Length: 209
Image (cartoon, rainbow, N blue to C red; front, top):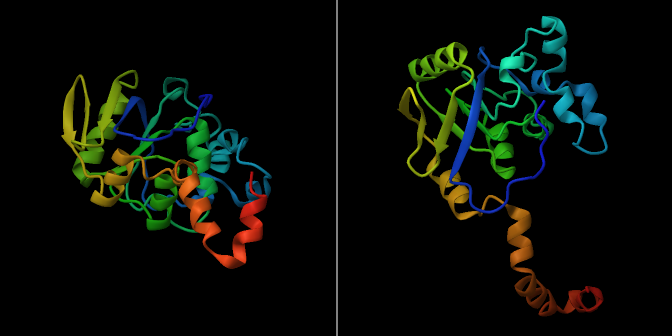
């Protein structure tokens, strides 16, 4: 598992690193992070528990256990990835394992939104493109890849693929507006001023340091 030393902030225009691939359509959030781990007080340990049941079943041969994929930061998947229950623990678990971007045929809508809230781009491509990328990663797992959010290109030394990042999420990533916490902190003075203008909040605002 990759140790995450920081969380992304601000503008995200590119994600680079090695990739790993995971075959299968309709991989749901219960497989990504089993329900028994939802009792956690914080998300910190979820990276160790990502795909826990699948990994146990495969006895060390799951892609997230294979030595060649350790330290990878870009996950290539198939169709309808992240379907099922709308648990934010799923992208949290992937991020804390080390995933910084996902590429696939399609993503479940709520999962996609939860990834965006963490600054994790989800790019899509055709079934043929994804199959070719998965085959390339399996053949040469040591390759370094780069996903350019602006140009929507995914490339390495062996070639370049045109992918899609939806226009709204793309603009949010490129402007930094995906990061709601930083946006609130940046506009702290304006928020306090607006609160002060509301009579029923005056006493509360006066107590805010």
